[in-house]
Image 1 (spheres, rainbow, N blue to C red):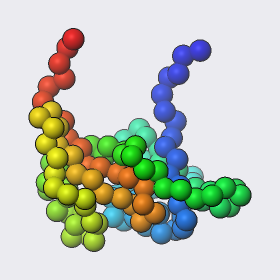
Image 2: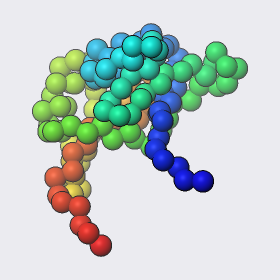
Image 3: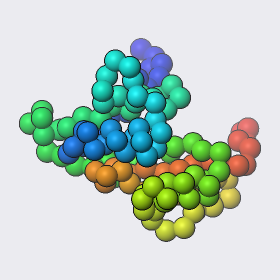
Image 4: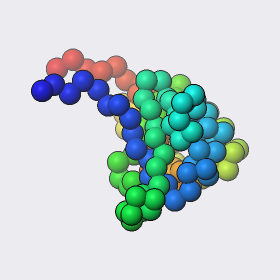
Amino acid sequence: MQIEKIDFVAIPSQNAERARTFYVDTLGLRPDEHGRFEFWLGETCFGIWEPARMGMEFAPQKNAHLALHVEDVGEARKELEAKGVEFFGEILDTGVCHMAFFTDPDGNDLMLHRRYAPVSEA
């Protein structure tokens, strides 16, 4: 067996319509033409699902931040703040990349990310 790729990222929600509005209108993800609660970011599909509809308890995804690649973390953060998104702390500069942390309306952890240092070849 060889795993080839990630087919989609499942995003739990308590209100799929609210989540759809956030991911499409606020973040600008491209809606899938065949699934109301699926969105695309490059080649990655985000699938919104409501655990309660499957008899499961809702819990937001924590401490596994999805790193959303942007050209400029500072500018992207300003754009999202203007749309009401609240960030946690200042932009983090690791010496390799910039990151800015926030959550979606359900509390799922997300981050804006931009690597600025070249990948070292070990």
